Length: 455
Ligand code: PMP
Image (cartoon, rainbow, N blue to C red; front, side, top):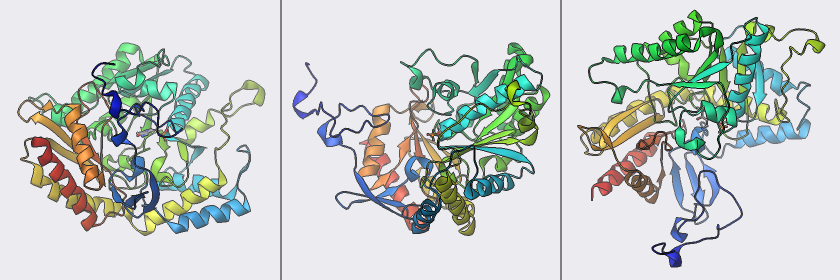
C-alpha cells in the first residue's frame, strides 16, 4: 500500500500471543518488552534491563513483585487443597470472606468470589436486579454509571463503562444502562466552585433517576475516584450527595473498589476518604496484588436475605463460576492482605503521595502540564498544549512522552481513549512499597520526557 512503509513493517505478529488493546501490525522496533522477572518495584526484561513498574502492572501489584511468601503460601495451599467445587467451602475462602466484611466494616453481609474485576461487577449487576425483583420492586432494573468510568470487558460491564471507543464494533450492547457525567474539577464550568460542581454532578444523577422513573432504577455504580478514565477526584461533597440520592430513591449504590481497594489511594479503601458506605462493593486487583486472579462482590445482609426461599421458587442466585472461592487464590489473597496491613502500605502510599506531589510540583509551570492530581499512589498529570484553553495534547504527543519515559527505564501509562480527544492524562500508580529514590526515578523520567516533548 502506498505510503505504508512496507519494508519496516512486521505484518506477522512476533509470536502467537494476541495481546489486549494492541494493534499487532506494528513496526519491528515496537516489539513488546518481554519480561522475565519481577523484583520489588521493578520488572526485568530478557536483556536484563530493569524497568521501574510505575503502573504496578495494571494497577494491581500493590505489594510489589517477587514476594516469596506469597509463592510459598500458594504452594502450601496447592499441596493441601488446590481446588474445590464452589458450592462447597474451604478454609481460605471462608476466612477471606470474613476478613473482607470485617475490613470494610460490614457487620453482616455476604461475599461472592470470582476471578476478575469485570466478573465482580457483572455479578453485582445481576444481584441488584434480582434483589429488587424479589424485594417487591420488579421494575427496578436500570443501572446508572458515569461517563469516563471503566467497569469491565463483558458486554454488561462494558456497557456500564463510560468510554465510547471501547464499544465500537461490539454493539448491540446490554440494554438497561445509562450514564451521567462525573465530577471533573479541572474542566468544570469556571463559574462554579468545587462544591457547586459536586452539587451539580449529584443533581445530574438525581435528575436522571427522576426522568427515568425511580421505580425503574436499580443501582448506581461508581469508583470512589475514576482511575483508568483519567484520575478524576470528586469534590468532597460528591459522595455524600450520591449516597443521599441513592437512599432517597431506593437505588443501590455499588462501589467499584477494583483499583482503589487495598491501599492504592492512601487509605485501605477509596471510599473511606469520604466516610460513606455502599450497599455493594466490588474488589479485585490489589486483593491478591496480581499474584492470583481473585475478585469479590460484597453485599450487605439485607440484600442477601432477599435471596432466601424454597429452591423451586428460584429465588437463589443462579450463577456459578468454576474458579469462585478458589482455595489457592483465597489463601494468597489472605497472605497479601496480611502484608498490606503489616507493612502499613496504605500509609506508605499516602506518604509517597506527598513526596511525589512535592517533586511533581516542579512541573507546575511546564507548558504541557495542565493539572496534577490524585490520591495516594494513583496520580495523574493532565497534558495540555495550551494551558489557558486547556487544549489536550495530541495522542501522538502523549504517546511520545510515555515512550520516552520507557526509554528512561520507567513504565507509566495514559488513560485509554476515554473520550475522543481526551486521552491526555499520564497515569502513575507504582507498587505501594515505593521508596523515595524510586519516586525520584519516576519524576526524573517524566520531567525529561516532558522537556523532550517540547523539542
Ligand atoms: N473496575 C475498574 C475500576 C477497573 O479499573 C477494572 C480494570 N482495570 C475493572 C473493573 C475490571 O477488572 P478486570 O480487568 O480484572 O476484569
